[in-house]
Amino acid sequence: MLAVSRTNRGLVRKNNEDSVLVRIPDLFAIADGMGGSEAGEIASFEAVRRLQKLTIEEQTDEEVLLSLQTKIEKINEQIWKMANQQPDKKGMGTTLTAVYIKNTEKAFVAHVGDSRIYLLQDGNLKQVSSDHSYVAELVRQKQLTPMEAENSDQKHMILRAVGAEPTVQVDTFEFLLTGVQKLLLCSDGLSNMVPKENIEEILK
Image 1 (cartoon, helix red, strand yellow):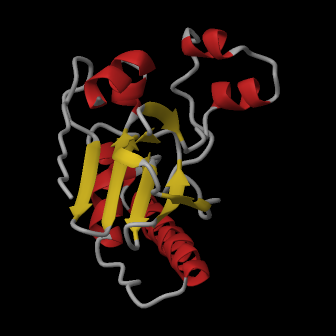
Image 2 (tube, helix red, strand yellow; image 1 turned 180 degrees about the vertical axis):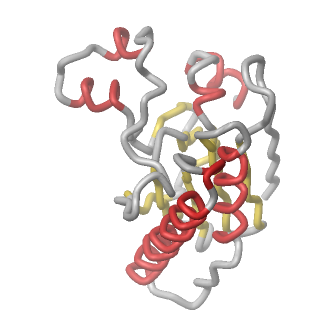
């Protein structure tokens, strides 16, 4: 396995609010912070720092998914408390998308927000996570087309974030690694700025 990570502050904010977790060979995550002048980067940093301590090596598949969910629910509670105890951090939160690779056959996901997981599988790029965003929900309800969503000025509005509320709903699922050449975890700083076709070509 070769694992590479990179973040970039971008052209809008003073701070880089993304944090990444690379724990070779089994646990990887991306967190994209939000809220407050410096609070977003604190929320994302705390999320990956706390997730890094997760130990699930000897668990069954069902236990792995439950452990990932329970851990992120606990992280949510901790960041929520932190945000409400310090006025300058009120309203902070973060996306959190984690992949646990148990073996060469199977991977497990816990996901909150609009950061994404892509697979380059058999030469094709496909998104395996679902965005928890306002425009993605409108697309699912067929009130917007994917093209309209892509050009919407509301696509930055997310419906779920770790630490934004006292509790959080976590998506968990597993996928097979058969035919997968590459995995990409990214924030919307990539997926909103670079067309999917370009990402596919670069990964190839």
